[in-house]
Every structure is written in structure tokens, then in C-alpha cells.
Image (cartoon, rainbow, N blue to C red; front, top):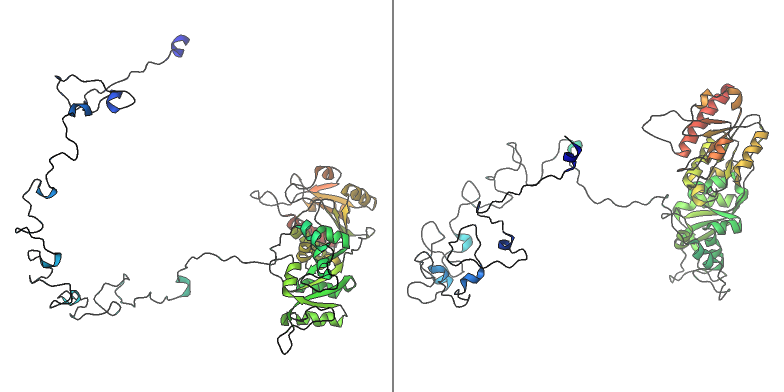
Length: 481
């Protein structure tokens, strides 16, 4: 076939069904925007042609037509009012069919011989007497078996077969639910001058200074942080007593015999510690820590969680620098880890495997963030660390001390056990951001790259989980060296 024949347009044959199936192909007959043509009056109509409205000019209007009554069409219908033409009420007609089976008429009203509920109907029971819905035995049981049970469902043989009824789940708050704050507004409120400095109100000056510690800028400016929770506070009381400035505990208001609040020398209300916090208060008193009992509302405003445990400690921001001159050492370099929970877990893992410390690079979350403190259970102060370091400078410094920099990389081709043992006496793990991973320029200046062997169904692990696996493997290798 030639090219000309291939490119020639296809012919479309339109087949009409004029006069077939009772349908016309003329658009005018269907009213598609054209006025229908005047038909020939002498022509005989067919079923395929639609009749125009104009042909029925002699048609009478709706109100002028001689319509027959609805009841008289097609059959000799008996008038509703009877043969005599007089109107009867519904209850007085005698020619209606009786509701009873014996033919006698029974009234619905109370004046008749029998009432609607007393007529001779079939009873629910088998013995003829009427029974209540719950007591009758003649009904078919709901269960498929032959045993007849109570109206409610039968007791289950075991608890495992008990049905589960779905309902709307309730939202449960946990300590990990973080309160979102407008830090600029909090700092502005905390720095506002007192109108009446000597007056004690709902927001005294000391309380507003504590509110500033709930913001990042406030912690940096004051050099303090808040440690929240019973376990965290007791950890710091036990191991880092020197950093605690004061302890703040929630309590109930003290009242006199007239139910009036008892005020202190500054005119402020006084409170009694909550009963469940009494052991923590007693321990702090033994260690001679300043204790301040405040209202539960004030504790909630200072808390970083939606559900508070009612106790927090104000501490100085202090840390210990790692010792890089050890003969055997494990250091962790943190590159832009922004989740406070992950950084708190890195601290706990480092402490669990006797790490020599952590170097937290710029762009990572502040280790004194309340959620980091809470995620590490207060143990972060037991791990020596430096923060806001330039990691390139830190890597160059570690090279001088003989450290092998091992970066975690998805494209790595070896595991930790495949590296020469002599390189694993002093190791610095380089872990990266949760989403982007470790920065490529840091990987390029690292000594080794490793990948954790795992299933191909998963691309990567959480940064704290990967750090824990590598720390465990390295601890075993160093033990055998």
C-alpha cells in the first residue's frame, strides 16, 4: 500500500434509522435549537414522526375540559357517601368490611362492647393466654440451635469469643507530647517591667524569669535549663548535685481555720507539696537543696509536656569536655540531628557502652533542650560533650589524637567487623541527620564508611538505633583487642 493511501482520511458512513424503532433522526424533531417545519396536513402521520403542539389548536385548556370524575372512569364506581347521597362519618358506615372474623362490627372507641386491644385475636402464647414479650415461649429463638435462651445474648464459654465493640478511641496524652510555645511572646512577657514591684500577683517577677527558661533564647541568655520529671530530678540529685539551683514542686493551697489562704512575708499564697512528691522533697531536703512549693497551675505553665509530674529543677548549663588522649576511646560526632528525642537516645547509648564523649555539631538541637534532658532520663550530664562545634575542625583535631573516623553511609560496602582491628582502638562514629543523612563533605574526609547489613526491604535505620548497633559491635571488638 502506498504512502498516499495510508495518509488519506478515513471515510465515515453514517447510517440512519428513519422510521425504524419509532425514533426519528431529524434534530428538529427533538427540539435541538431549531424550529420544527410545518408538516403537510394531508400527509398521514407515522409513529416515527413527532406531533407538534400547534396541530392541536382546538385543544381545550386544562380548566375547560370536560373531565370525568376520577371515580367514574372505566367502571361504575359506588359513591363514597352511599346511595342516598348523604354524608356519613367514617365510624358510622355500615357497609364497610368488619375487622373481626365473625362478621360483627367492633368499635375502636371506648363506648363499644369491646376495645381494639380486647378483640379475639390470636395470642402470642401456645396455650391461648396472652404473655409479655419477654416471657412467651412460642416465638422462634434468635439462636440457630434448639436451646432457648434469655432475650439478651447467651453467656460465652470463654472470654476469647467475646465480641469486640468498636468505639471512638480516646486521645491519650503522654509525657512526649510537647507544648508548642510562642517563644518571642514568652520572652517579651518575662522581660516586661513590674508596674508594682512590691505587690504579689499571679505572675511575680521570679516566676516570669522561670518562664524565660522554657525558650531557647532564654536558656542561652540565663545559662540555665529546666530538668522535669521525678526520675530526671532524682538522677540529677544523685549524680550532679552541684548544678542544681533550686527545686520547684506542685502543691495544694494552705488555708487557715476560716478557709482563707495563708500568705508569706511577701504577700504570696503558700502551698503544701503533693503527697506523691513527698519522697523527692525529703531527698532534696537531706541534700540541702532549696525547695519552692508553688501552685499546680504554675508548674503546668513551666512544663514542656501536656501532662506534668509536678516537679522540676532549675540547673546551671554545665558540661564536661571529653578526654581525647585515652588509649582506647569511642567518640560520637553528631551532624545536624534535630530531633530532641534522638539526641537524648544518643546520650543514653553512649553512656551504656562507656563512650568517652560526644561532639555535637552546629545545626543540631541544643542538648539542654527539655526534651533532650527528658529523653536521656537526666543521664546526659554523665556523658562528656561539646556543643556547637565545627565538625571539620573537630575531625582534624581527632586525627591528631589518632582517631579513626568512621561514617555511616547507605552506599557503604563493608561492615564494622571487616575493618582492620588496629584501626578500631580509637574510633569516632559520624552519624547524620534523620532525613538527609551525613553531609557528603564530612564523609569525604572520613577514614572509613560502613553500612549495617540488614534486609533489603528497609532502606535505613533510625539514627539512634544505628548508633546503638555500631556501639555494641565496637564494644565487643575492643574487648577482644
